[in-house]
Image (cartoon, rainbow, N blue to C red; front, side, top):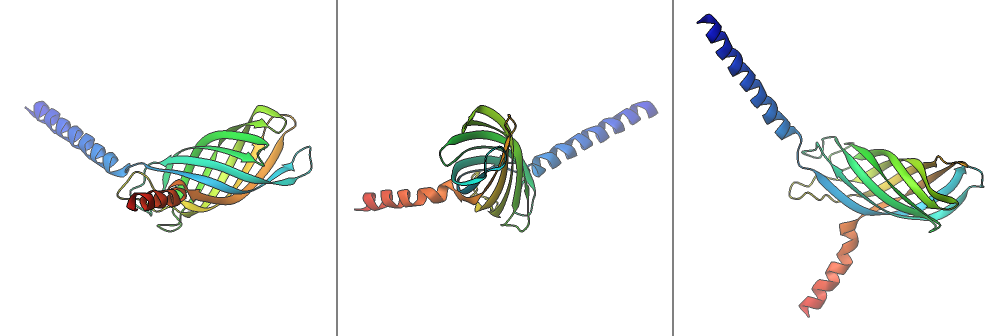
Length: 193
């Protein structure tokens, strides 16, 4: 009987531990939070490279999904994708991982790093590396999987192919939903008349 009782106690302890772990992980992973926005700013191209540095208009789009966050004061990690151009002379398409650090509940810093490929400006789909720091509004949305984000960003882009080049980008990220508000307002205006 002592051996049978020990097995029963072990089985109970094992099942209890598995149930506790499953309950904890389900609660700790939270719902994913997605965002899509436009980036507008200035790109300083060839900061380090064979040509002289020059400034160009930056325009891009960025989307991401963050996991492990249940409220505004939680950290989060997840993937991102982006597309950008400097002065419409090239196209950069990339993606990677990002890490949200809550400076305040509604104003986090988001650090990201990844790879991109550049076409144009003397490069034919040349690989590169990019890093970004975002600081702005990105509060947790308790009612939807979509969260609104808007703020400032700084980015470094290094193209690895010879001749290599390093670009710096500074600008504003504006949420896609905020960009849609004028169109939605016009639709409501037309429907109302």
